[in-house]
Length: 277
Image 1 (tube, rainbow, N blue to C red):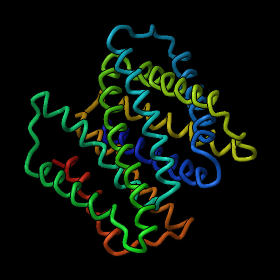
Image 2 (cartoon, helix red, strand yellow):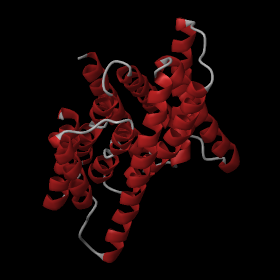
Image 3 (cartoon, one colour):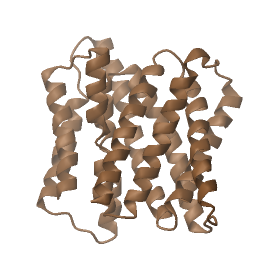
């Protein structure tokens, strides 16, 4: 039960973080958003590690955490950009297929999904296909395709990042999350020095909140992987699109076609079925 609650807490935190992060990228660059949110999240995790005062890990655990951080940096950039150029209710469900990566890793370890999990995989794939399809003019469809492509990139990198985080968390989930965020912050700060994006201005408190929520979600997820099945935790942690879609509907009044709504629902139902199995 602890793993389920922690995974759901991670999902809720990621949902709010991604909504506000994607919303701000409609006004300012993705790099500006990350330039504030990533170091802010790093400061939170550093404080937690300092309070615990445990010795840092070494060896492969550090390498896995670094690789997870690099994948996470690419994924969050792709997700925020996708949320900016496309519909939040479409991009978020596509990104939610990231648990397919941890599932594949589980299979390679000898895990065998049951019938419900296999059905969930099929539902997720079909849901993604319909959720990413947007009728309309040629230009509008091209714009939707860009958002879907970024969402798929985010799904792959997020799933890979979770594999690295889980491997490192087996040693220490707190240090694993901290090292992961160091790696992603280095990538972001390197890009900041190279591109020198505009200052965030008055929106920096919101961007700081995005970073805190994202780091909180990551550490919830890391701890959850040590208390339950990785495949289950990964899928439950990916249910954040439900909250993103609700927030987008309430605050942005986004309207989706029937096909898109059905695809999004099927994709999320598939993720839930993978977890239930």
